[in-house]
Length: 345
Image (cartoon, rainbow, N blue to C red; front, side):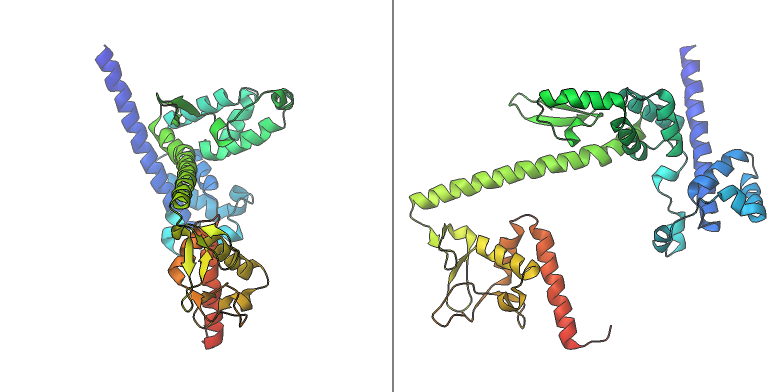
């Protein structure tokens, strides 16, 4: 009997999977025919006109009275601007496709468990509005819960409770485990549905792990920098910056291309930031070579040398947000070069 029940359950899952594939294929077809209509409209109509010829019925109804069915639910100008090819139209986001019942059940169970202060009807209504998408529904429920009186009382009493967890660490589906050496690691709670587990991994756990690893890397970098400075001090191997006259290790200095003036990474990074966001672009940047001019004071007031590009990049990218600043420097140099060349674009 148990084997028979298991076989029946497997058959139901198989039939549901085939039905979902069919419905989603029909939904993609209809979005190609009616690209300006939001997928939720076509999804509702496919469920309303069930049967073998439901696509034909939907098309017929849309051609007869499209405004009545759409009721203002059309793509915005920004959404239309992002569509350039038929492939863009048919590539519907996962959150707009038909969902399996097991996914819907897992999402509802998880959100009801997390938002106990909200009524079941509120959670179900938000899920219905967002096609039972966990990623879309949770921020809406968070906003609703933050305005409830229960949340206000809890927030009032939480002033006396100390917590070192960040907002991301307090996610309802994340639990933290400690290893034998005391290292805390985030782990996702099981939801019972593989699709929801995959979604949570990409939207919650992966960004949290990336942030955690970035913090660990930053701590390791600061520790290595401190040890390197201590060893250089002991070995009397520090160099004096020709701009700010502070001492730095060999790994954090640059020399100009003409007079071997020593410039530390901090001065290089600050000079680039001031050139981009301040008033020293014309003075600090050699526009012919696209390099940072030497910052060391000389008897002639200006050193003709420059800081090599590779070392400038290292100095800038070791700060926050160094990568964005370096990209902005390249963009501005490119714009200036194109303006000087007077090339019609």
